[in-house]
Image (spheres, rainbow, N blue to C red):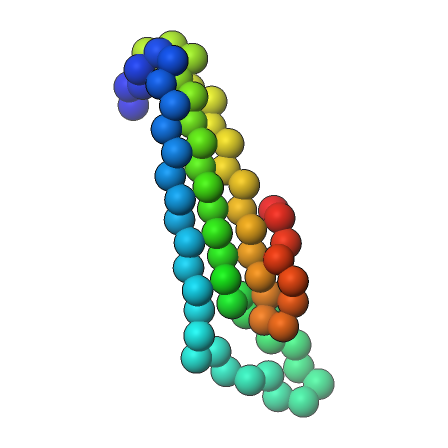
Length: 67
């Protein structure tokens, strides 16, 4: 992969999920309702870059969590 020295790139990836099955009594369902990623990349040289990709998820019935 080639990078331009000093370049900054950003990319957003997100999803919202629906139609998930309900858990049976006494069973926990590990299902996401929303997930979001914002990837930020900086070109240090023409062949080397630093990338940061925080991920935010919202489990079914839960609050947003940063991973």
